[in-house]
Image (cartoon, rainbow, N blue to C red; front, side, top):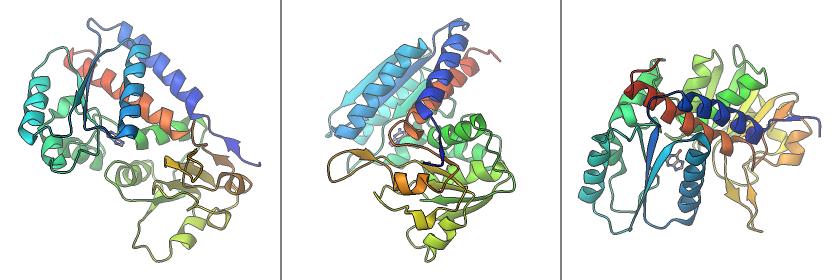
Length: 282
Ligand code: GUN
Protein backbone atom coordinates (compact mmCIF):
# COMPACT_ATOMS: atom_id res chain seq x y z
CA UNK A 1 0.00 0.00 0.00
CA UNK A 2 1.45 3.32 -1.07
CA UNK A 3 -1.10 5.55 0.61
CA UNK A 4 -1.01 6.96 4.14
CA UNK A 5 -4.02 5.81 6.14
CA UNK A 6 -6.13 8.65 7.53
CA UNK A 7 -6.93 7.49 11.05
CA UNK A 8 -10.41 8.83 11.81
CA UNK A 9 -10.70 6.86 15.00
CA UNK A 10 -7.60 8.44 16.57
CA UNK A 11 -8.50 11.93 15.40
CA UNK A 12 -12.08 11.56 16.70
CA UNK A 13 -10.74 10.50 20.11
CA UNK A 14 -8.55 13.62 20.21
CA UNK A 15 -11.45 15.84 19.17
CA UNK A 16 -13.76 14.35 21.82
CA UNK A 17 -11.08 14.85 24.47
CA UNK A 18 -10.90 18.56 23.55
CA UNK A 19 -14.71 18.77 23.63
CA UNK A 20 -14.76 17.18 27.08
CA UNK A 21 -12.24 19.68 28.43
CA UNK A 22 -14.24 22.63 27.08
CA UNK A 23 -17.49 21.15 28.39
CA UNK A 24 -16.04 20.80 31.89
CA UNK A 25 -15.37 24.55 31.95
CA UNK A 26 -19.03 25.41 31.30
CA UNK A 27 -21.45 26.38 34.10
CA UNK A 28 -23.89 23.69 32.91
CA UNK A 29 -23.33 20.36 31.13
CA UNK A 30 -24.21 20.34 27.42
CA UNK A 31 -27.39 18.32 26.85
CA UNK A 32 -28.32 16.30 23.77
CA UNK A 33 -31.71 14.71 23.01
CA UNK A 34 -31.79 11.95 20.41
CA UNK A 35 -35.08 10.84 18.90
CA UNK A 36 -35.39 7.51 17.14
CA UNK A 37 -38.68 6.54 15.51
CA UNK A 38 -39.22 2.91 14.51
CA UNK A 39 -36.85 -0.01 14.76
CA UNK A 40 -34.32 0.31 11.92
CA UNK A 41 -31.39 -1.78 13.24
CA UNK A 42 -28.68 0.48 11.74
CA UNK A 43 -30.29 3.57 13.29
CA UNK A 44 -30.48 1.73 16.62
CA UNK A 45 -26.69 1.17 16.49
CA UNK A 46 -26.04 4.85 15.67
CA UNK A 47 -28.22 6.03 18.54
CA UNK A 48 -26.46 3.74 21.02
CA UNK A 49 -23.07 5.07 19.91
CA UNK A 50 -24.28 8.62 20.36
CA UNK A 51 -25.17 7.86 23.97
CA UNK A 52 -21.64 6.50 24.54
CA UNK A 53 -20.12 9.59 22.93
CA UNK A 54 -22.13 11.84 25.26
CA UNK A 55 -20.85 9.90 28.27
CA UNK A 56 -17.27 10.22 27.01
CA UNK A 57 -17.65 13.97 26.58
CA UNK A 58 -19.33 14.49 29.95
CA UNK A 59 -22.65 15.53 28.38
CA UNK A 60 -26.15 15.01 29.65
CA UNK A 61 -28.17 12.94 27.18
CA UNK A 62 -31.71 11.76 26.68
CA UNK A 63 -32.92 9.14 24.27
CA UNK A 64 -36.45 8.80 22.92
CA UNK A 65 -37.20 5.49 21.24
CA UNK A 66 -40.66 5.92 19.72
CA UNK A 67 -42.71 3.22 17.98
CA UNK A 68 -43.01 3.23 14.17
CA UNK A 69 -46.73 4.10 14.57
CA UNK A 70 -45.88 7.49 16.15
CA UNK A 71 -47.96 10.22 14.53
CA UNK A 72 -46.59 13.41 12.98
CA UNK A 73 -48.30 15.42 15.74
CA UNK A 74 -46.77 13.33 18.54
CA UNK A 75 -43.32 13.78 17.04
CA UNK A 76 -43.79 17.52 16.55
CA UNK A 77 -45.08 17.86 20.12
CA UNK A 78 -41.94 16.16 21.43
CA UNK A 79 -39.67 18.38 19.33
CA UNK A 80 -41.51 21.47 20.59
CA UNK A 81 -41.20 20.35 24.18
CA UNK A 82 -37.44 19.82 23.73
CA UNK A 83 -37.16 23.21 22.00
CA UNK A 84 -38.39 24.79 25.23
CA UNK A 85 -36.13 22.84 27.61
CA UNK A 86 -33.25 24.80 29.14
CA UNK A 87 -31.14 21.70 29.84
CA UNK A 88 -31.30 20.47 26.24
CA UNK A 89 -28.88 22.20 23.85
CA UNK A 90 -29.10 19.88 20.87
CA UNK A 91 -31.94 17.90 19.28
CA UNK A 92 -31.24 15.13 16.82
CA UNK A 93 -33.97 13.26 14.97
CA UNK A 94 -32.44 10.12 13.51
CA UNK A 95 -33.12 9.78 9.77
CA UNK A 96 -34.65 8.21 7.84
CA UNK A 97 -38.06 8.46 9.51
CA UNK A 98 -40.59 5.65 8.92
CA UNK A 99 -42.96 6.03 5.95
CA UNK A 100 -45.88 8.32 6.61
CA UNK A 101 -43.90 10.88 8.62
CA UNK A 102 -42.98 14.19 6.99
CA UNK A 103 -39.23 14.57 7.50
CA UNK A 104 -39.14 18.10 6.13
CA UNK A 105 -41.75 19.39 8.56
CA UNK A 106 -39.99 17.73 11.50
CA UNK A 107 -36.60 19.23 10.62
CA UNK A 108 -38.23 22.65 10.21
CA UNK A 109 -39.73 22.37 13.69
CA UNK A 110 -36.33 22.03 15.41
CA UNK A 111 -35.14 25.30 16.93
CA UNK A 112 -32.22 26.30 14.63
CA UNK A 113 -30.13 27.07 17.74
CA UNK A 114 -30.51 23.40 18.76
CA UNK A 115 -30.07 21.96 15.26
CA UNK A 116 -26.79 20.14 15.90
CA UNK A 117 -27.19 18.10 12.69
CA UNK A 118 -27.21 21.34 10.65
CA UNK A 119 -30.29 20.16 8.72
CA UNK A 120 -32.65 23.11 9.33
CA UNK A 121 -33.01 25.37 6.26
CA UNK A 122 -31.81 28.34 8.35
CA UNK A 123 -28.53 26.56 9.11
CA UNK A 124 -28.24 25.20 5.58
CA UNK A 125 -28.63 28.81 4.38
CA UNK A 126 -25.94 30.04 6.79
CA UNK A 127 -23.69 27.25 5.54
CA UNK A 128 -24.38 28.15 1.91
CA UNK A 129 -23.36 31.79 2.35
CA UNK A 130 -20.28 30.76 4.32
CA UNK A 131 -21.31 31.81 7.84
CA UNK A 132 -22.25 28.50 9.45
CA UNK A 133 -23.19 28.27 13.12
CA UNK A 134 -22.90 24.47 13.07
CA UNK A 135 -20.81 22.25 10.81
CA UNK A 136 -22.74 19.49 9.04
CA UNK A 137 -21.34 16.46 10.89
CA UNK A 138 -20.05 14.16 8.15
CA UNK A 139 -18.66 16.79 5.75
CA UNK A 140 -17.33 18.75 8.72
CA UNK A 141 -15.55 15.61 9.92
CA UNK A 142 -13.98 15.15 6.48
CA UNK A 143 -12.68 18.74 6.54
CA UNK A 144 -11.14 18.14 10.00
CA UNK A 145 -9.37 15.07 8.61
CA UNK A 146 -7.97 17.00 5.66
CA UNK A 147 -6.75 19.77 7.99
CA UNK A 148 -5.12 17.30 10.39
CA UNK A 149 -3.17 15.64 7.57
CA UNK A 150 -2.11 18.96 6.01
CA UNK A 151 -4.24 18.50 2.88
CA UNK A 152 -5.38 21.90 1.61
CA UNK A 153 -8.24 21.81 -0.94
CA UNK A 154 -7.30 25.29 -2.25
CA UNK A 155 -6.73 25.11 -5.99
CA UNK A 156 -7.34 21.35 -6.05
CA UNK A 157 -9.88 19.54 -8.15
CA UNK A 158 -12.38 18.03 -5.69
CA UNK A 159 -14.86 15.48 -7.00
CA UNK A 160 -17.79 14.48 -4.79
CA UNK A 161 -19.83 11.41 -5.66
CA UNK A 162 -23.40 11.63 -4.33
CA UNK A 163 -25.67 14.66 -3.90
CA UNK A 164 -27.57 13.92 -0.68
CA UNK A 165 -28.61 16.72 1.65
CA UNK A 166 -26.75 14.99 4.50
CA UNK A 167 -23.38 14.50 2.79
CA UNK A 168 -22.87 15.30 -0.92
CA UNK A 169 -24.31 18.82 -1.11
CA UNK A 170 -22.82 20.20 2.13
CA UNK A 171 -19.50 18.45 1.33
CA UNK A 172 -19.35 20.28 -2.00
CA UNK A 173 -20.03 23.59 -0.21
CA UNK A 174 -17.32 23.09 2.43
CA UNK A 175 -14.74 22.17 -0.22
CA UNK A 176 -15.80 25.20 -2.25
CA UNK A 177 -15.42 27.48 0.77
CA UNK A 178 -11.95 26.00 1.22
CA UNK A 179 -11.22 27.20 -2.34
CA UNK A 180 -11.38 23.84 -4.06
CA UNK A 181 -12.70 23.52 -7.61
CA UNK A 182 -15.66 21.27 -7.00
CA UNK A 183 -17.45 18.81 -9.27
CA UNK A 184 -20.58 17.27 -7.75
CA UNK A 185 -21.50 13.99 -9.44
CA UNK A 186 -24.67 11.91 -9.11
CA UNK A 187 -26.61 9.04 -10.66
CA UNK A 188 -27.32 11.02 -13.86
CA UNK A 189 -23.69 12.06 -14.43
CA UNK A 190 -22.66 10.36 -17.70
CA UNK A 191 -18.88 10.57 -17.34
CA UNK A 192 -18.59 9.86 -13.62
CA UNK A 193 -15.61 7.50 -14.02
CA UNK A 194 -13.54 10.05 -15.97
CA UNK A 195 -14.43 12.87 -13.58
CA UNK A 196 -13.49 10.74 -10.55
CA UNK A 197 -10.18 9.84 -12.20
CA UNK A 198 -9.40 13.55 -12.60
CA UNK A 199 -9.81 14.29 -8.87
CA UNK A 200 -7.01 15.47 -6.59
CA UNK A 201 -9.46 14.89 -3.73
CA UNK A 202 -12.17 12.28 -4.29
CA UNK A 203 -15.04 11.96 -1.81
CA UNK A 204 -17.41 9.06 -2.34
CA UNK A 205 -20.79 9.14 -0.59
CA UNK A 206 -22.98 6.91 -2.73
CA UNK A 207 -23.54 3.71 -0.75
CA UNK A 208 -22.54 1.23 -3.46
CA UNK A 209 -19.93 -1.42 -2.62
CA UNK A 210 -17.16 -1.64 -5.23
CA UNK A 211 -18.12 1.63 -6.98
CA UNK A 212 -14.68 3.25 -6.87
CA UNK A 213 -12.15 1.06 -8.67
CA UNK A 214 -8.46 1.72 -9.34
CA UNK A 215 -9.33 3.20 -12.75
CA UNK A 216 -11.25 5.99 -11.00
CA UNK A 217 -8.37 6.98 -8.73
CA UNK A 218 -5.72 9.44 -9.87
CA UNK A 219 -2.11 8.64 -8.95
CA UNK A 220 -1.18 10.56 -5.77
CA UNK A 221 -4.74 11.68 -4.99
CA UNK A 222 -6.62 11.77 -1.67
CA UNK A 223 -9.50 9.30 -1.38
CA UNK A 224 -12.22 9.79 1.24
CA UNK A 225 -14.79 7.04 1.62
CA UNK A 226 -17.95 8.19 3.39
CA UNK A 227 -20.08 5.13 2.69
CA UNK A 228 -21.10 2.46 5.22
CA UNK A 229 -22.18 -0.58 3.25
CA UNK A 230 -22.29 -4.28 4.00
CA UNK A 231 -20.80 -6.68 1.46
CA UNK A 232 -22.20 -10.15 0.67
CA UNK A 233 -20.37 -11.56 3.70
CA UNK A 234 -22.06 -8.96 5.92
CA UNK A 235 -18.77 -7.15 6.49
CA UNK A 236 -18.80 -3.35 6.84
CA UNK A 237 -17.23 -1.66 3.81
CA UNK A 238 -17.30 1.58 1.86
CA UNK A 239 -17.72 2.51 -1.83
CA UNK A 240 -14.02 2.24 -2.55
CA UNK A 241 -12.15 -0.94 -3.54
CA UNK A 242 -9.69 -0.25 -0.76
CA UNK A 243 -6.57 -2.24 -1.68
CA UNK A 244 -6.44 -1.20 -5.32
CA UNK A 245 -7.25 2.45 -4.55
CA UNK A 246 -4.65 2.54 -1.76
CA UNK A 247 -1.99 1.40 -4.23
CA UNK A 248 -2.49 4.63 -6.21
CA UNK A 249 -3.63 7.23 -3.67
CA UNK A 250 -1.38 9.32 -1.41
CA UNK A 251 -3.94 9.34 1.43
CA UNK A 252 -6.98 7.16 2.00
CA UNK A 253 -9.62 6.63 4.70
CA UNK A 254 -10.48 3.09 5.87
CA UNK A 255 -14.02 1.78 6.48
CA UNK A 256 -14.60 1.29 9.35
CA UNK A 257 -12.37 3.63 11.35
CA UNK A 258 -12.34 6.53 8.91
CA UNK A 259 -15.13 9.05 8.41
CA UNK A 260 -17.67 7.32 10.72
CA UNK A 261 -16.01 8.16 14.05
CA UNK A 262 -15.42 11.72 12.83
CA UNK A 263 -19.14 12.23 12.13
CA UNK A 264 -19.90 11.26 15.70
CA UNK A 265 -17.18 13.50 17.12
CA UNK A 266 -18.49 16.46 15.11
CA UNK A 267 -21.94 15.95 16.61
CA UNK A 268 -20.35 16.33 20.04
CA UNK A 269 -18.52 19.45 18.88
CA UNK A 270 -21.77 20.94 17.58
CA UNK A 271 -23.56 20.15 20.85
CA UNK A 272 -20.77 21.95 22.70
CA UNK A 273 -21.14 24.93 20.33
CA UNK A 274 -24.91 24.98 21.02
CA UNK A 275 -24.34 24.78 24.79
CA UNK A 276 -21.89 27.70 24.66
CA UNK A 277 -24.37 29.69 22.60
CA UNK A 278 -27.18 29.02 25.08
CA UNK A 279 -25.00 29.84 28.08
CA UNK A 280 -23.55 32.99 26.56
CA UNK A 281 -19.99 31.60 26.62
CA UNK A 282 -17.58 32.45 23.78
N1 GUN B 1 -28.99 9.30 9.30
C1 GUN B 1 -27.83 9.08 8.65
N2 GUN B 1 -26.92 10.00 8.97
C2 GUN B 1 -27.52 10.84 9.83
C3 GUN B 1 -27.09 12.00 10.52
O1 GUN B 1 -25.96 12.47 10.39
N3 GUN B 1 -27.99 12.57 11.34
C4 GUN B 1 -29.26 12.09 11.49
N4 GUN B 1 -30.08 12.74 12.30
N5 GUN B 1 -29.70 11.04 10.87
C5 GUN B 1 -28.82 10.40 10.04
